[in-house]
Amino acid sequence: MALARSVAVKLINRSISAASIFSLEWAGARRVQAQRVRAFSALMSPPSKAVVYEREGPPDSVIKMIELPPVEVKENDVCVKMLAAPINPSDINRIEGVYPVRPKVPAVGGYEGVGEVYSVGSAVTRLAPGDWVIPSPPSSGTWQSYVVKDQSVWHKVSKDSPMEYAATIIVNPLTALRMLEDFTTLNSGDSIVQNGATSIVGQCIIQIARHRGIHSINIIRDRAGSDEAKEKLKGLGADEVFTESQLEVKNVKGLLANLPEPALGFNCVGGNSASKVLKFLSQGGTMVTYGGMSKKPITVSTSAFIFKDLSLKGFWLQKWLSSEKATECRNMIDYLLCLAREGKLKYDMELVPFNNFQTALSKALGLHGSQPKQVIKF
Image (cartoon, rainbow, N blue to C red):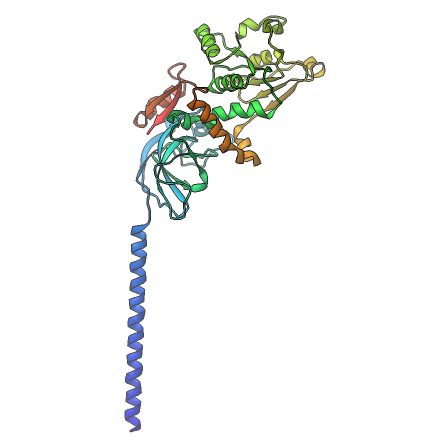
């Protein structure tokens, strides 16, 4: 009897053990299957054609167009099908390795643009497929057909906005707006002076100032077509346009007629051109430098500091975007796009198919003379 009970217990234990092993194996198989299902059901972006560079250097030598594999769209991510993105001078400087802030290589080029939401992660509620969005603040990697980034990166814009303006609204127009607002209080009837007036920032300054009743005095280079450039700028709302050679006079303020002396000036050229801006400024005036196209230093006379109490300051949009003021950026974008929709803010651009990127790049590099801003259309 004792032996029978012992055998029975052993059989029962063996049965329980076998059942446990089977149960564990079944649970493990189900976990593997679930993992496989999740892997196959994960939301993925489409493959993306992209302009990339593996090392810094001359853009026309180091960039290439490749196809990137799909990437996972996580719960807080938004996958955006790019519609348009510009080639800005700062984009070129990043690739060359001379811009103060630049992505680690290998990298996808581009820093601003507009796209259409293609898909969203499960936790995204404020954006939906079909919405138009721009990265705000700007974000590296816009020269590719699909971009996947966290929802916090994207700002929804009106689909009534002209596509090329939505693509280019931050780097240049926002620079113009911030410089008009950040350094002195300007009221309707006041004046500003600037060099590099034919640049996109210069054209935006003219138009935003005009919209606010502020006069603009503009300086351009002596070159072929300067008369046509003057007429174009006056058509945008410029009050006065002078070539640099016209300002080789002792009293430049005598050229102002009834315009008030400007308290604020903008310099993106440097060298002798910056000195022309300084000559126009009123007592206690400020010149803001945001570029140095001539690559020549700014020279200021001692008397300008002592007797006119002039101030020299600088502006870098990326630094402004990195400050606590960055939260204001999106309202300003909406304001500027509203001006563009109303035809009160405009500048020349050329839309180029993405497959012709190399042609657009050569134009942006100045290899074909003066060209409109190159905007890639995907």
